[in-house]
Image (tube, rainbow, N blue to C red; front, top):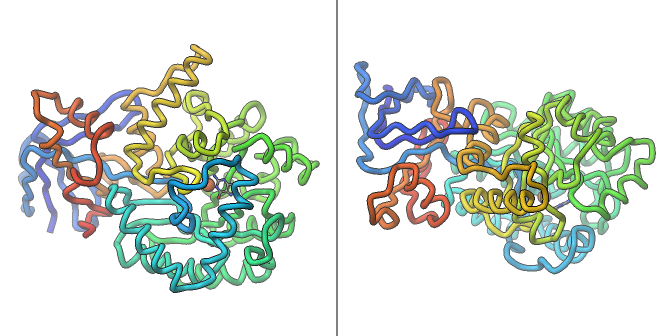
Length: 416
Ligand code: GUN
Ligand code: FE
């Protein structure tokens, strides 16, 4: 049977303005997709659920997060990228060879994603096939959507985090076999980044993406030392993005690249041409001192953008908080160059919902045909004065946390 939810509805069809429906109704079909939004009760037979004075908004999407770095959240941010990986990150990821260790951390990670209202995520696991499979099963059990990457790496890393090209491909094939029938929890081809993968490894990743038509995620132009290393490792390539492109890892299938702090010129053009999404990770860029990504330039170029928490380069799993950082970082960019207008609230919200959601299908809006991914916000403790609905949402984004999220829905089903 169809369901109808009544609440104050706020969402973004376009980046420049919110749709606000006071005391609105949203009808959701048995397939979990939105039928329509209206200001009166739809006539057809449906179960009506009344959320009263609460806000109903699309759920959050995190397009770049390392589940296997959750233990390091909030610590070890005193180094830049390359030494940070060697000293803090790789030693932690090696521990995921142990399934019991992995299960404890992965359960906590998924619980906390859920707490903060993130119903879809692009996730890095580790090289380990069995703990990656476990993470995917835990997402299935939770009823949340995830693209999960077994991380491909075989150079510039400790031996315990290196895998042969054959083992990498076999591991992927086995995960693909297990999850081929699930439309919400699927593998995503994940070469860690160019410095971690030999040319053979990169080629094998591109071949897997093409053969199984799987999406791709990685890191791009995050840090200047990293970019210099890539130029040395891939001397034929005209830019870092071109190195991925040569291996079929740059938009040949849906692709999301984290950071793009230093992307410009040819790389920007290639991203635009190939429709590669940027996972903007402002907290990570600040913590490991990478730089400020030019989000306005991406938006103006029509390059798709989503937000990533990038735990543990980033310290905050709460995408609402990441939205605030994205706005604040854009204001720092604006101070450097007044041609780059800073992000508005509706732009940040649209980036986190409809724009990021496009990586998962029709996700992130309340328009007809979209999967009903939604959060019910009870902001009564923040709404102690006569705030407008938009100001109530803004205060929740800036001041709220999981205590105000009363219900979470993913693809039409409530997630408990
Ligand atoms: N580049 C390659 N690996 C990583 C990682 O784990 N985190 C970040 N922020 N950048 C990376
Ligand atoms: Fe990352």
